[in-house]
Image 1 (tube, rainbow, N blue to C red):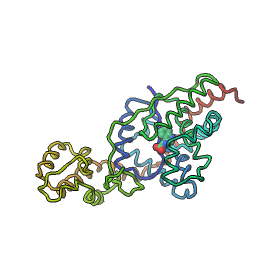
Image 2 (cartoon, rainbow, N blue to C red):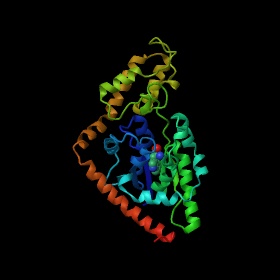
Image 3 (tube, rainbow, N blue to C red):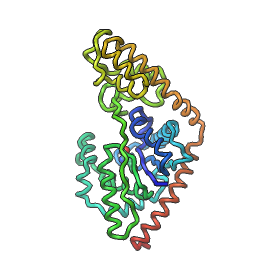
Image 4 (tube, helix red, strand yellow):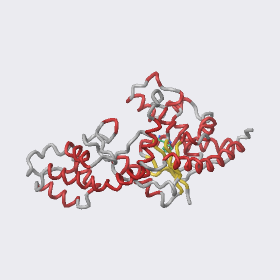
Length: 322
Ligand code: TRP
């Protein structure tokens, strides 16, 4: 079976944008590939290193969410980055193969500096973020890496590092290909990109009344004021949700355009369908709260270490290290 690696930082509860963007793809890919799914806790430290008091609980929440939506820890290797120390060793070796100016050109870093106003506060660790990511990926010598569009530049650097290493010391690494999810972006209830930090997210673990409250507040067609005004589903957030959760969406689209349904009724229908679709995940989550998550992660790390250990043997041999 071909190998696959992907990861996310442990930012806590996942929202429906994460679910229909990355995670549902991860779940499907388990059938086709031998998958390694990583909780990138060291990456989380590159920006949130000052207060680490809730890091452990964030990791646990993240893992519970992943398993509840269908990541199967028996099929896939599900692990926490910091439990596989080999990543740190490979990161150190890779750090010799990249120039500082190459890292300073990283568009994701530039964006972060701008959005978070970091300017003079970029740490050595944050600059090296994509080098650590390259180590995460290449240590499993995967064929493919499912990622979002925002990670494209990081994978490009990963491939450069693999090429450079192979050129200098002999071929150890593949140049993994990205897999981009084809699912359109899910908007937040205020129409911006769905993001936890914007406060516009619907979480997979939200209870039905919470879902209803959020959907009722969601942005709709500003030109549809009265119930019978014809609507314009294109820019409507609630319509975007119907496209995910409502099998009868094309009928609804006609009703809306003809002015046969008002926004309130449309939102209610949406909230009900969403709550129903997410119910199995909430159920699974309740079960998981009683499970030994740490045990699952320990076992995942053990399996990850087998492959990571093999790669490091090859690396030390190729580099003539002691
Ligand atoms: N940088 C990724 C993100 O923010 C997380 C990540 C860390 C990752 N290591 C990875 C993604 C390896 C893919 C492969 O989403």
